[in-house]
Each structure stands twice: as C-alpha cells, then as structure tokens.
Image 1 (tube, rainbow, N blue to C red):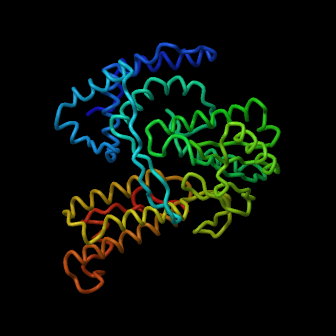
Image 2: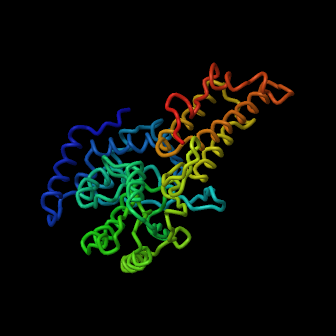
Length: 383
C-alpha cells in the first residue's frame, strides 16, 4: 500500500499552493468537490490506514471495513460528501497517562471521520501552508521538530538570552488525536506569529519566537516579561488562554527549561567537566522510553524472541531517531542500562533461571547475538 502522493493529487496541491502564495488575497470558492474525488478519498484511506489506531464510537475497525468491501465503503463516504448528507460522529474520549503523573484526554474519531478529515486536509493544507510564518515548525513539509530544536539552540547562543515558554490551553477546540487538529493549531498560532512579525515585536523585545503546533518559546534579551504581557493580550483577543502550568520565565544562562522533549540551558561536558549552554533529552523523555520498554518486556508477553526484539528495536530506533541531536551520552547510557536490565530479567523469567541472569545473559550477548539495538552503538553519543 503506497503512501506516495499520487501525481494527480500532487499536481492539484502544487497549483493550490502557488495560487495562494502568489496571490495572498485570493479566495478559493470551488474546493469542496475536490474533497470527495475518488482518488483523494482512496489516498486518504491509505494514509489513515498506515497510522493504524483504534476504532471510534461506532466500533468499526480497519479489519471490519476490509473484510467486507473497501471500494464500496469509500464510494459510500464519497456519496455522502457529494450529497452533503455526511455528518461526523461523536469522538470517543479516552484518558491516557501523563509522564509527570495524572491523565489527559485523547479524542478518537471514527475511521470514517478520520478519512474525511484527511481528504479535506489533502486539499486545504497546501493553501494554509502558503500563509504560515517561517518560525512555525509543526506538521509542515520540509520542517520538523528537530529544526525547531536547533533554532532554539541557535537563539540561545546569541548574547544574554532570557527565555519565556508557554503553550495555549486546550480545554476546548478540536480533540487531541484528531487528524485535522495539528493543522488547525497551526492556523490559530499563525495569527500570533503574524502579529509578532507585522508589529516588529522581535525588534522591540530583542527576541526570537519558535513555535511548534500549540507550543512555543520566546528567547529575549532582557524583555521576557514584556514579551509575556504582549503574548497574553494577543491570545486573549483570539479567545485562547496560556497554559499557566507550562508558562514560565527563565534565565537560560543559569536555569534550564524543556521544549519538545529536550532540556535547554546549562550543561556540563562528561569528558572535560566544563560548562556550556546546550540541550539534551529531558528527564521526562528518558522516563517515557523506559516506561515503553518496561511495558513491552512483561511476563505476559509470550511472543517469540524474534518478535519481541523486533518490536523493542522499533521502539528504541524511533526514540534515537528523534533524540539524535544535542548532548545524548548521558541519556543513551541510562536507557541502554535500563534496556539491558529489563531484557535480562525478561529472559531470566522466560528461561526459568533462578539467579540474576548476568552470567547467562551478559551485555555482550544481549547487544550482540540477541540483536538488541544499543543506543551508544554505531551512531555514537555526544556529551
């Protein structure tokens, strides 16, 4: 099942983007018929299918859809959209654990609604993309969280930066978990970013603003409090509120702060002991990967070692791919040790070894013939 955007859809997206970019005041009036185009709905289904996910309130799974008649299912959705009889269903609300304790809500739309949202996104996102400010990094082509992280690091190394961090509150709006939610977050935040640029707040506050979806940081030289006051005022006019639990002012030369899973601020080299301003995977990020590993390597997991190790390496490889920049040595070492301990205990229980298993399952075996991915491996780690 190819996820490459079909050429006809890509041609449409390029035309829409160029029109919006070259004529900012242009208003598009004939787009709805594109949403229920057969090729767009089929591609939307493939994208949603690749993301997997649980059923919504209707209980319908991908297996249910494909065991009947997928073509008929897609055509049926297209007819509802064409006839304007389509109505989204309620979102299934589940609570998931937060790394720092407590729970947060996650909304799970039905597969039907996820496909409809994805189809709309395929048509509308190129137009929206043309209007987004360059300092917005979330869920955009040719931009990534790593770009945002490196931009924050770049701004930190300008002289005397103080830092304001914040994020909008999400007690209402699109559900976290919805296909369209990240794009809508970009649109809302873009009004803040555009106001920041047009009113020359960067020059006034001697600051740079970095945004990812609904999270952002402002790095200012001596004007952090004024930046915060201005930001609050703009968000209030947009009928949004700052999440006060995530909003703070820090002196980044002597205090640390977290953003996008990384901790920024004072660091010390493991080799020389010298201090420097940098960034590394946060304690919460390390705790999350440890929790994922622990949840996989439980006694109730009776899969073959080949299957277990494959899934374990997928988890570790994905984490390393994201947390591959900055000072990684300390975090990698902690995760590697945790993984070894968990794998050793998992295999010791499985093979009914009465001892701690250090002789039967040494590190050389776990990270060698048993094939477990070592973070401090060929890619290396930086201190």
